[in-house]
Image (tube, rainbow, N blue to C red; front, side, top):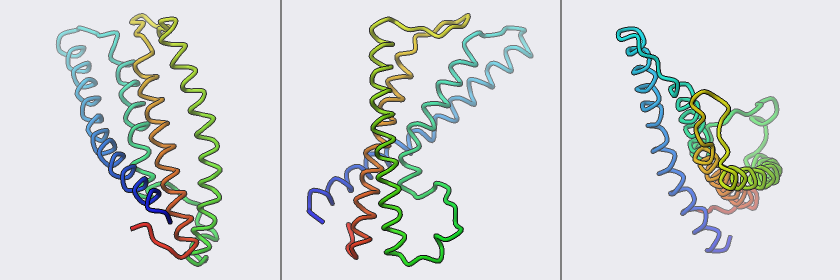
Length: 170
C-alpha cells in the first residue's frame, strides 16, 4: 500500500482513539446530571425541565463520538455463521466489500447531516419542548461524529484491502 494510505490510517486511528476515549467520560457527566435531578426532586422538591433533553444530547454525543473508536477496536457485532470458518484473506475480502457498502451509507448520511445542520443554524431551529434548546450544537456534534465514522471506515477499508492482498499497514 502507498505510504500516504498508511499515514492516513495511522492518523485517523490516533485521532479517533483520542476522541473515543474522551467521549467515554461523557457517561459520567450524564450520570451526574441525572443524579442532580433525582436528588433535587426527591430532597428539595425542585424539578428541572432541561435534564431529560440534555441527557439525551449527551447520550447522542456519547455514542456518535464513541462509534468510530468502537469500530477501530473491532467491537461491533458480527453474524458468525460462516465468518469464523473462512481464511483471513477471505474474511478481509468480505470485510472490504461490506466496508465499501457502509462507506456509501455514511456518505449519504453525512450529506443529510450537513444539510440538517445548515438548516438548524440558518433558521435557529429549536426543540419542541418546554425548555426549547437550540438544536444546532448537537447537530454539529452529530455531523462531526458521522465524519469521524466515515474516516474510520475508510481506514478499515484500506486495512482490509491490504490484508486481502497479503500486506500489512503496520
